Amino acid sequence: MAHDGFSSVAITYRNTPPDATVAAIEAAGATAAAVKIDFLGDPVHVEKSLDDLVRQHGPFDTLVHAVGPLVVKRFARTTLQEYTETFDGNVRSAMLAARATLPAMRAAKFGRIVFFGMLGSEATRPFRGFSLYQSAKSALVAFARCLALEEAPHGITVNVVSPGDIREKALARRQAYERSANNPRGRPGTSEDVADAVAFFVAAERDFITGAVIDVGGGLQTASE
Image 1 (cartoon, rainbow, N blue to C red):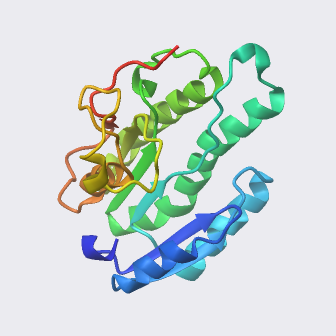
Image 2: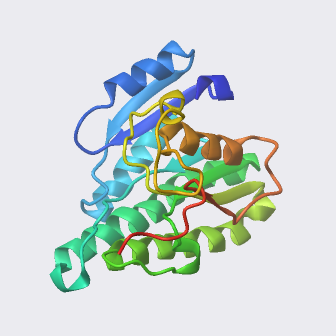
C-alpha cells in the first residue's frame, strides 16, 4: 500500500493477527496497525470497535472491505446460523464499516470504497451450492451501487471487485504464468491480480468511475455444477 501512496494503513482481523502483513506494510514505508474485530459479533460492539479504530488510527480516505464467510453448500443442507453469519459477515459488516468511515470522507470531499463481490453477483447469476453466499454478495453489490449514487456528490467513489476461482492465495503471478487453469485465460488467478483491480479503483484520479463491478476471473463466466 505504501508504494500506492498510502502513508497509514489499518487492518482488522478476526482470529490470527496479520503480523506478516503489518511487517510488509511497514517495510514499504507506511505505518500499520492491526485491530481485532469480530464482524459476526454483537453489532453494537462491532460499531463501537470501528468507531474506536477510526478515532485512534484515522481518519481514513480509503476503505477496502474484504470481510465475509464463504458458504458453499446446497440450500437443503444449510442452517439458519449459516444464513445469519453469511449475511452479517458480508452485508452487515459492509454497512457498519461504511458508516464508520464515511463521515471523514464527506468532510474531506474525497473517498474511495471497494467491496468484494463474487462471480455473477452483479447480475444475480445462479450457481448450485451458492444460494446463501451469492445472495449476500448480490445484496452487497446493490448496497455498493446505491451508496455510489448517494456519495458521488461528496467526491466519494464506491466500486466492487469480484474475484473468480482463485484457490491458491499465496501463488505469485510469475508462478501462475507457468500453470494451467480451467478458465478462458488458461492460468490460475492470484492475489496480485485482485490487488491490481483494487489499486485501480482507489487511485486518486479514478473519480469518474463509481458504481462499477470488475470481474477478476480470467474471463470465467460459469461455475461447475
